[in-house]
Length: 209
Image 1 (cartoon, one colour):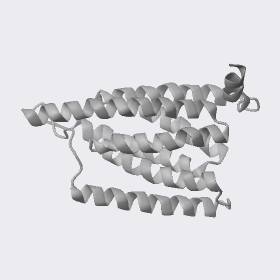
Image 2 (image 1 turned 60 degrees about the horizontal axis):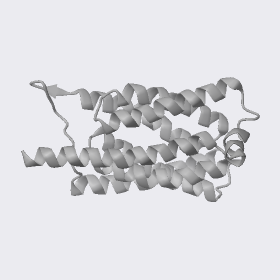
Image 3 (image 1 turned 180 degrees about the vertical axis):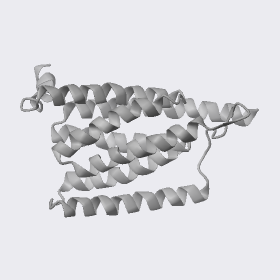
Image 4 (image 1 turned 135 degrees about the vertical axis):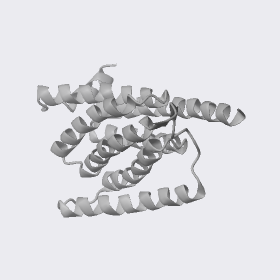
């Protein structure tokens, strides 16, 4: 048991109290945002914004630029998603839960590839040699980028992408010694599975009407 506590605490020995508190706030708000997303509750976006803005700052300080870019994008996409989810006509939501079309799938693949390319350039620009964990970061950045776009448009496939990339990110952050973030993404994975099941039930009920 002590080994587990040491794993989560050792990475924070040289971290300021302020940064630890900020990461704890991002941890709580990040999990809360996924819970709201699972419920199709628009609070996912203002709550998520708190988490992503804090995370951008922390990742910039840690010089994890791929992840930092993703969280900056999450912040911008949260504003778009907030607007998109809140749109109504005759008191009915304009954007319902739906599946991606063939065109949207192709756009998603393109977004993955272009995000990977841009993230790689960012690493090179800042003079970092790409190591194995950075290549993984580049790959998951592409997946997360597309997942966020799908979520903002209420595409059920967003959950599949979150689950896939979250499972990769759990050991990645553990390897980097970021125990709190590793635990957060483990919780994200569990919530994403629940989110997919909830949205699928909602979609099936809607189609049955």
